[in-house]
Image (cartoon, rainbow, N blue to C red):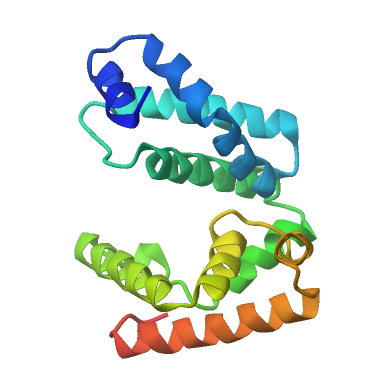
Length: 184
């Protein structure tokens, strides 16, 4: 079943929509949540919350790219769960990624909708301007929350090379955002 058909099922309020979503995107959503939470059980709960959120938001939303929409929901739910679960303690894996991202992503509390749209467009343009190798490393780290070790193993790079690539890309991204008038 294609994405448009699945979205149509949500709009019809058919319970089949969730089953089709799980069949097509269950592993994808679980991968995102597990990279953030490092727990299959917690990831599974987040994926179920994703299906619930998709049910609650369609309609009125009618996503063009269902995989990206579900990925965004899953990621948001998993990060919130991580922050809640680790409010009083430091976990090195995810905390390092969040600290890195803090260097180049503006605080959403300081923005309005037009700022968010401008930021989204700037991110999309910047990521599209990267070479394929750098883009894959950057997205794997900051969207999928993959570890440096996993990225290095998956793409035949050294961990040191991945770290340097990420540092240089973060610096270039920060400079790009500043040129675009987006303050960090």
